[in-house]
Length: 229
Image 1 (cartoon, rainbow, N blue to C red):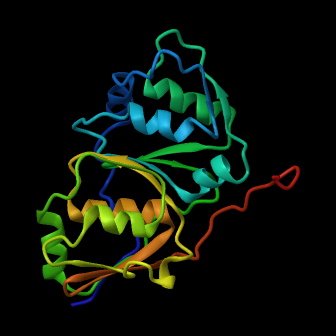
Image 2 (cartoon, rainbow, N blue to C red):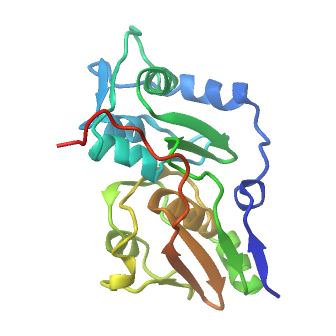
């Protein structure tokens, strides 16, 4: 049976934790004392490095619009004034002072811009393979900063006989975004969702395989005062 999943509520779950739950979790994750600003050179490493294992948020994901702001448009510059800042303070500074935005979709925290489409596009054509992915745990903890598809393939290997496509060194992955995210205790099913959200891809679950493709959807195009150099 073919099952098409287009809704964020179906793909990554209904919003079961309240805003207070996930925000409280983030207040208990301290930043390094020396961090007083977030810039394009340290933002991803500081945020991912401060993220800790917890019962509410399983992954923090920089979506493609966010990485565009960091590495291409270079518009991320936020000052942190708190004396003992937490990860929540850092994210508040980013949303107040930069084009980056935050969305919580159980169990993922998405760092995005208006350019991003938050709903995944996926198809399940083989239920038994989906069940395998839901039942197993992949690499945990995991943290990737600006990593390409081939790097992820090497890190994961082939899990429970499920092949990830495109294959290593395939030109079919050349238009995937580079991946920036961190996670704890992710199932295989959650891992492929995180990967698609970070890499601007969609996927199809087939018999013993998950095939990723570029996702051509886009939200609101960014407005620039000048072209980045």
